[in-house]
Image (tube, rainbow, N blue to C red; front, side, top):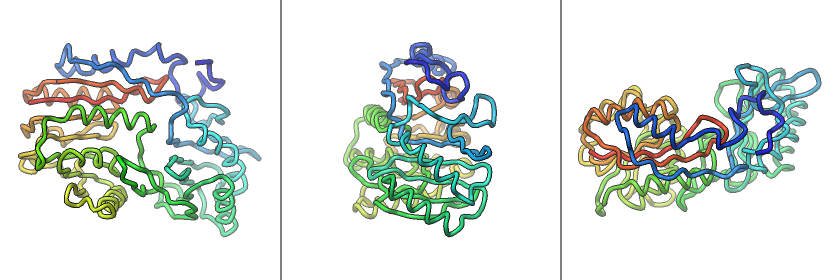
Length: 355
């Protein structure tokens, strides 16, 4: 790429050429460290630039101006973002009017953050501010949403719960033809293309299934994978975040899918699924947080489930967790690297393990 004006200052990109980082080699190394030397690495899928549909940006007031962007590398300073080859253009176009809005708010005194998710009918924005919102502040936010095609705008005082300010269009995101209303600021895969590549790799890794086959899904979120999996078998999904479970379950009931799937709230770090709860499953699919599956991995490795499909955004966590599967007698069938984090060491991958 042409070097970004922020490269070397902004903490978002580690290199200025995707070719400098061999992400297939990163995945192969992670699996080799886990004991799967020579694991079949499928061709790398590179996600196009300017497709990132989620932004979590820092904001800071500096005298009469507002800086909005990512943190400076190894610093709490905020680099005011004036260009970005990663963000979807519709998100980037919101940054200038957001600076104007933030500068005008009494509830934004010094520092805050802005989370933007691009949904089916426009942006969903969560402003985390450092003072209570006033009546005039709320009117300004509503006017901003109307002027910029925002589907929903919400606020939160620092790390507190989000409060809806305005909903001007249905805040929906569609997974495998099923619309879901996510909580504001919800986790989404970084891009639509990345999400599609992950789903395709997960479905390709499924074993031969029968109509009554059962898939256990861990860390199911708002249903990114769940609704695709439900087209192939019955899905028992587990998720620890209450608001995600509420959104997931509502979509299931609205679309009459209760006979094919269900979602249960479960903190898998504190209450991992037991061996008996996974017994008889044709496959377990998991998309754990960045740190990996933690306490759940011991039971998963001991479960004897014939097929485990692990979606990873952290090669080090994948290596650690996969080593437990190796020790329990699993082999690695395939691993698909997906580069939806260009110019960084971060890597999405889907690894398929068989007992």
